[in-house]
Image (tube, rainbow, N blue to C red; front, side, top):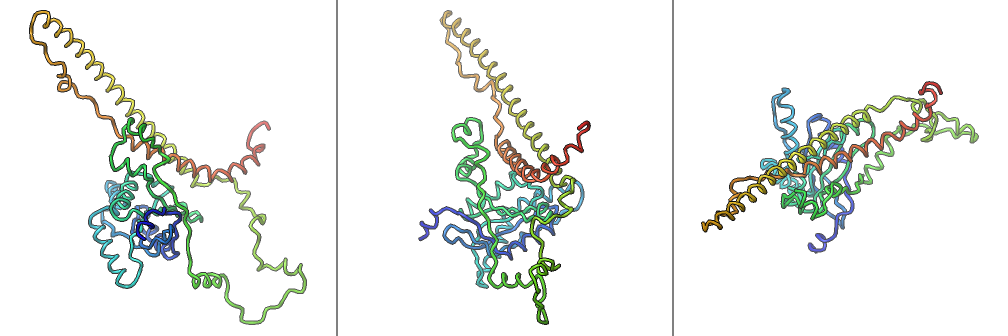
Length: 364
């Protein structure tokens, strides 16, 4: 049974509404610092059911400009800290005592503007998939996107090919060409659904209005029913919000972050080009030294002297070490994430701009 469960891949993630509310509360309370926590639940026929969660303890750091980044880094690295691992095991033991699902199924993190593809996220998820439980997920909650009225929850896992490459820690150009690993192969996103119990669903249906205390008067005609002010408006009912031409501030900030990621990508490319130039210079020096040593040995052989060793270049010259290409892969994946966000937000804005194009361009 255990072998069959391990062989069946994870297909979907089901999150209880209580877990969603807990994560939203913890993320909003810690904003702008990253909030992290543990997820518990069970795996049922390829569906990972997340039934409970609890946050990791926060680290108190002086609120100064110099310590803001350190506090955020400590919070982002909390899931794999030794102290939090012991805290997580203790909490799971207490949950087991009160008959609550006590199987660790992953961890959650909060993010801002979709900026979550970094080394901390990769190391945390690698730690969980390798040490804790192979069938674990990382649940990402975007606080800024949710504040705009669109709840943002996404579930990710590391791909098997990236797990193998990260375990060997070989992200050189030769290793990437041999394995065929691309930035699209780093994370696997799983479909996510939010589950409510039948009791909670019945409660939600009763929330919009109170039950009438007197008998309702039925409308005499169909026209009277259509003019009832209490009748909800259809989704495409005309409203003035559709005529607003202002660009979404979330879109503007995402574009700024996209440009910043592209600049970081360009910096990494410059570092790799510098390595290639340094390697070329050292190889040219080695080639010149080997030719000179061969000429010297030829002269020594002609003079019936013992030739000098030709492998001394390994001691005299030191080739530069190739920088890891992992940062380039992560940065490329983050650029793709920002590009998808921009593509999702420009649909409505572009339609409005084309509608008023004649009024915006002079001479038309």
